[in-house]
Every structure is written in C-alpha cells, then in structure tokens.
Image (cartoon, rainbow, N blue to C red; front, side):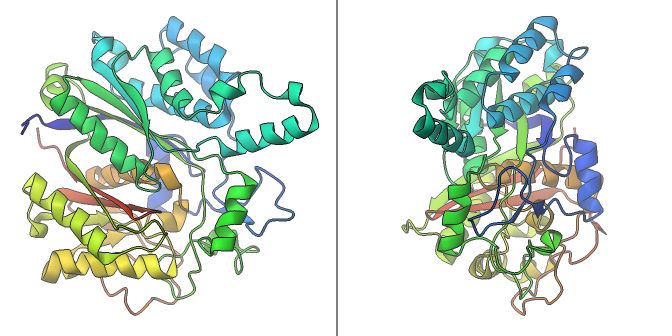
Length: 427
C-alpha cells in the first residue's frame, strides 16, 4: 500500500451563503440560513417552494474579478467559455479557478500532465436540459446548438481542464449524495497509485429542474408542506417537526496534492486527507441502513489507523429527514460506543440545505475551516429536539472546539455510503 500523504492545499466555495471561504465560515458560525423561496423558476404547479437558490449569482462580475488575478491566457479562455457553457458548468469553472489561486498553483512551475480533474455528480444540468426540451417541443432549431456537448456532465471536467490546462486524467464520478466523497477517494487514488501530483476535486452545483423537485416531493423525500411562508426554518435536522431535506445549490472545490511535493513548493496546507472509504446497502431505494453506514465508518477508521477515540468531530450527513437523521445517530453510537457521547457533531444542512451531489465537498470545506478556526457552527432550527438525538449536536450556537481529527459522513440515494477522515496539519 502506498504511504504517500495527501494534502488539501486549495479550497473554494460558492453557495447562497457566499462565494469566499472567509465569508462562508462567518455565515456558518453566525447560524445564518441560506434557504429562501425558489427564484430559479416558476413554482406554480409543483409542490416544492423552498430551497437554497443561487440562480441570481452574477457570473460575469466574478469572471471580471479574475482579470488581474489570473494569467491573461487563462482569463481569456474563461471569458470565452463563460458565455457558452451551461450555468452549472460556469460555477464549477469559477470555483476551480478560485481554488487554483488559493493553492498557489498559478505561481508554478507544475507539470500539467500530472494534474487531474475529478468532478462529483451526475445529471448536473437538469434544468438546462429541461429548458432545451421545452424549446425543442416549440421549435427544434432553437435549442442550444451545443446542447449535445454542454448537456453532458463531462463538460464540467473538460471546461476546468481547458481553462487551467490540466492534462492529466479528467472524469466525473456519480454516487448520488455521496458523490463528493467518492470523487475525493478517486483523487487520493490518482495521487497514491497513478503518479499524479495534484487533483482538482469539484463538487458541482446540481441545477435542479422543476420535474426533479416535484418527483422528490411525490416520493416524500423533501420538505414541501409546512415552511413555504418561513423558508429559513425548513431545514431542521434532529427536530421533531422535520419533514424532509431542502434542496440547495452549492459548488465547492478542493485541491489535493502529494503532501511532500506541496511542502517542497511552500504551499499552505489546510489539512491532510487520511482516507476515504465506501460501502453500499444492497438496496436501491432511499432507505438509509445502519449496517452500511457502520461499515463505511468502521472501514475508514481501520484503513487510516485512526482509533475511534481520536475523532473529535463529525460533520454529519443529517439531511432533515425523519428516518435519515436518527439512522445516522444510531450508526455513530454503534461505531464509537462510549466515545459517541464525547464527540461534537453538527449539521451543516440546517443552514445550507442539501446541496446533494456536491454536499460532501461543500461540507468538507466547512469542516476543514471549522477545524482550523477551532470553532464549530451551530445546528439551527431545533425547536423540539428528537429524543433520539441524545449526542452533542451543537444545538443552537457556535462552540469552541480543539479539533485534530474530523470525520465527514455522506450517504446517498441507492444505498451509497462514503466517509472521509481529515487531520489538522501540524507541519
């Protein structure tokens, strides 16, 4: 087994709570909600009315902000692509550029053939596809002439590769709401076993279409009944009134590198990625199972050599579904035993909503920022605590916490489980 250590050297974020990592952390610690009524589309005729809507994000102003920060050739490619590619791909491109700069890779030198791109997610541009289908129904020749390219998930990876000239392996990884952790797992493997120096791990925004949201309502997966007039209260993990998750837009990027090479080039190191492991439930339905979750958490502890008692903090999956929240807590108790009572646990989706495929990446950025700040954000909207939520879930307010090891849980539709462990870098 490879002994290469993996460093996180760059991070970027774009959610309704902000598009800078400092602003994002401040909003989380303040307990602000990102949830509003949907503005991306007319919700007449569908049940879903609330979500984390980032559709009004000013892409062109962001592109212009890179003019003095990026090399002229990179910025020229960005400007050209920013008016052509689908909206979700634009956000991926911008976050990748932010993370690239944050990692100091713009200073070079680096071998582009040893830089890869792994994009987390699938069916990413669903709204773009629906819009073109509607256009096609009215007049086939008026669809986007590049629809057959821009509608592909691989366009995210290709776009990032083009603007940053990353010429190593590029691909997308689909694992439902575990996609971000699964992409990180692939990135770790690329560095440890395939002679790659750095990987751009992009958790891409799922551009929800109305049919996606209505389908999730009919399946009983998302909140749509009680909080249309108070959207900020809709996402409420661990509360007895929770009624389903709240879909949300969100993009995040991690730059991961061979730690020795990162140190040699003088990179700032946010954290070490100790490992990412996965399991499945053997059930295609969105029905979380303790057995699969326990297997993933236990496997990553064993693979990394980290004792359960060393974990200080778990960034929970905690989607605000009646079954999911308590299933995860039961799984944590099985894995950690008595130590479960000493863990700090919080629920980023209480503020962010569920960014779905990108959630593990978005929430890993949040977890790493909290680890380095020595503060944990609150889990909000818990008015009536579920009796089964008897662990320390950081209810109601930010708390100080000395964190050396953090576990990030992610569990997706189809019985897909993936869990990562990060460690504070000591130098």
